[in-house]
Image (cartoon, rainbow, N blue to C red; front, side):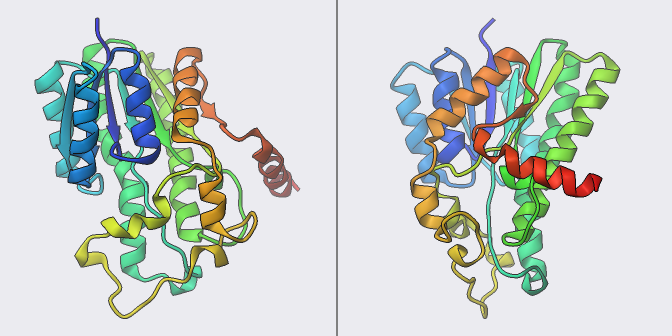
Length: 269
């Protein structure tokens, strides 16, 4: 049977990389994103290669939109085998200066988007009984501590523990669903410009966000780190291999494992 993959945040970055990688395996692809123009461009590109594609413009922070995505997927293709809860955004200022709108926007997309995806798709996957996979996009920042981009780290730590709990509960149930959590380091995407998709209702009209390079680690220049980062295609290859091998934690950048170990040791001490 031809597999069906659903990807949120599919129009660019890691999402687009996943779509192209799964399409190379002759899967049917469901593309979901808030960016209609970029979504249509990817749809045209994939269809020109003979890929069976469904596109859904939607906002993962909206439960009804995600439920609609699941319903459309089943109506169009009759099943779902891979769900990638991938959509993500970032904004940065000291934690105590973040507005309620900042918290609602970042947690709404990064964490609630995953929650909505699980609630909408897992019952349908259980009803199918087929072998299924859920890939939740977290970040290396979901595994380490420290200052900078605290609101983003909160959301990604949430995705990691949510994925761990989901995997354990599905295993206890004997479900034929494997969970994977993607924890990449720097990837060459447009997430630093994610404010372009921030809803009007969650804008901070009288505030200017500080440059991200002031609060991110590495060289101190977030945009340079991002531009030099891993390609989305390579990340997608890591994800595909993890699905094939049943790997839960997907580490695309093993050089960060020392920072994870350091945090764990601090906790134990």
